[in-house]
Each structure stands twice: as structure tokens, then as C-alpha cells.
Image (cartoon, rainbow, N blue to C red):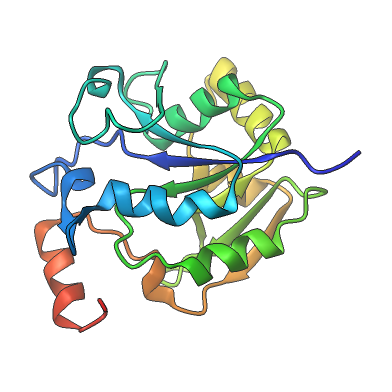
Length: 198
């Protein structure tokens, strides 16, 4: 049996409380972080969906993309993964957050090239703490089946815990900063001050 088809899921349903404004709408070089991430992911997958909360469906920043609305409320990234699995249960999903401003084509290409569908997932180890980086990873159907089981039984919905307990292909990012996300207003400024943007 061949590998499951690979779809893309860009997570853009966060409330950006710490950041103070919608991170998906932040612009770099004339493009929102959301549009930039969708464009990066598109060449590697069969289709891309943007994960949103139900109340974001008509949001101007998101409405131009193919959306998948969460069915679980306030479940974090897991809600997006579960919605994607419900939408296409036989697909694998390349999952990225929209708030990785330094994510690049090479980091995604390395992830996709390392994919082995005989395993449950393919993921980078975080350059910060060495643990699973769940927001730039490939989840095979088996991993998402497990997440659905955990959701049904009241278990942990942490994608990081899911990857840690799964049969995962582990990678080290050549450019650790490619996995740096922006959670607070100063994070983006610090990355810019380090001269990391082209």
C-alpha cells in the first residue's frame, strides 16, 4: 500500500493574547504571515487548508483561503489537527503554524524528504529544548487516529506529547531560527534586529 496523500494545514486559529494583535495579519514585505506560510507550504502538498476558530470564518485575513473550522473549542492546535483528520481521515497532514516568520522552503523540503509513511510522524526537535516541535511536522493518519482516541477518552491533547509517544522520524533543523515563533510583540522585533530577514 502506498503512502497516504500529503495535505497541508496552516494553523491560524490562535487568539494571539500575548502578542496583543492577530499574528496571522502581521505583514512582512507586504504579505501577511498567514499568506506567506500558505505560499511556502503549497508546493509540497496536494491541497492546503487554513485552520480557524468558527468565529474567524468571515475574517478578512482568512476568508480568501480554504478554511477548516475547529469543532472543539479552546483545544489549541489539537483542534485544528482533529478537524483536518475529520475532513480527510486517510490523508497525512503537513502542519505548520502561521507565526513562524523565518520558516523557509529548505526546512519544509527537508521535512517532506525525510517522511517515511511507515512511521506515524516526521518532526523536528526544537532547537530550544530538544523536545518535539509539533507546529512544523507531518502527522500520518495513524498519529491522528491516536489523537482522536485521546480526545474521545479525555486524554492529553498536546501535539508535542503525541509526537513524543509516537513512532516518529526525528530531525534536527539546519537553521534553528526557521522554527522560531513569535508570541510577544518583542519577539518579531528581536528577530528583525538580528538581521535574520532577507
